Amino acid sequence: MTSSRPALLPILAISTTILVWATAFPAIKLALTQLEPLPLASIRYAIAALLAAIWLGWKRPALCAGCGIVGGAGYSVLLNIGQQTVAAGAASFLIKTESLWMATFAVVLLKERFPPIAWGGTLLCIIGIGLIASAQAGGLTLNSGAAFVLGAALCSATGFTVQRQLVSRYGALHVAAIMFISAALALSPWLSQAIAQTGNASLAVRGWIGF
Image 1 (tube, rainbow, N blue to C red):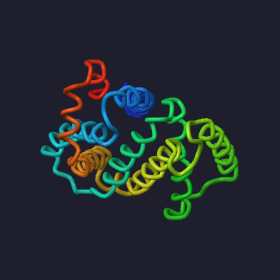
Image 2: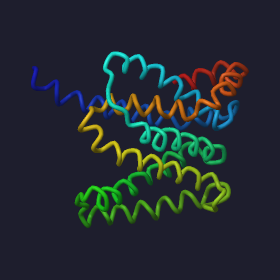
Image 3: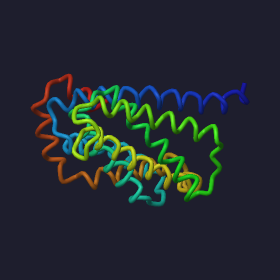
């Protein structure tokens, strides 16, 4: 009985991550109907940072603030701007270009191996992403929503790559908590605006922001 628990925990963690991650895109789309991109990013990370601060008060880990500013704040702001014009489903596909960046960073910076079949899958992924992006409003021009979502993917991939060694040193919860707090601090100039806009938002939008 005890041997099955360690194997079950990662499966539950991954399943929960996928479910919450997938639901986040329609939640962002709905919240953007009544909040602007930067205030929305600010209040999302303020909520996460509050919970993280409580946990860190108990654990007191080392810091990795830069990872949170790029992979958290940068990711959230660019994604929110992009989702003003990009559909939630399309954004969820475009954001997974982070996998392409992470694979490249892993090979170049971390000296990890990436087999030929994986590069073949990567090429198919690039083609699919190009098709999705070209179908969005503004296509894939510099100021288009799709370009902002792809920029968010680059920020996310950078954060994940930096996390790789930090997690093994400090633990997953330590790194995640510091990322939330540093991202919230970076976005704090827009928090008062976020609180005002949330106060004027509908109950449904407030619920999605909290989610």
